[in-house]
Image (tube, rainbow, N blue to C red; front, side, top):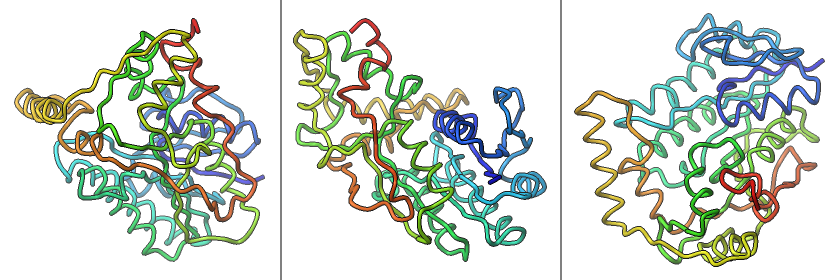
Length: 308
């Protein structure tokens, strides 16, 4: 039976990846800080530790045929905060794999933000993490998803709740276009890469939900109106206000010593960027994957939409 090691198993994407692996009856070894973060499942072995602990990484990869590297930092004050996990943690996992299981299949979840590293420390750290993987001799695959959504995602929940109430909060320019991907489709693609249908390796690619050229704000407005059968009003948030909020949040977190909220200057620059459209023309090594969730059919499962 194929054994798959997973980092970031307790996160939003990790939860769905574990479900997909369990359904396919893989043996799973999951790196977590506390075993209580995982629900007991057949064929699941928690490995207690962190990415900066070489002994834990060695235990995680022991006997594994593939590793799905999901762990990543999404919040921080500066590049160094993101790099601790997204770069140094990735490099540690790569080093451990090269030293102990050089034939392992290394599946690395990056982000579309890596395509625009000048916009944010997060994007820059994700690109640097990709380089750690690319520079290795491992049998690697890098996946860059766009905005990932699903029923239990906290990041996009305010957008869906506002839409359900008849308000589209537009946080980007009117001409912006963006791709989306349902978390279950992302999990399915990652798991199918574990046992590829051909020998493709050492390639990076983007994923989206199958909607060519992505979405724009009007698409979201019209979709919400069709589901609600009521008007949806657009509430544009000026870029200057967004930037001011981002700096205020960052300075407040620094002064109080609390964790920075999601909306910081780098995230604002990502939000106001005009092009986050993916190219889904090729998925090397995973010819049998097709997205099965479009926002048209998935919207009613999202926060705030249960009554529609």
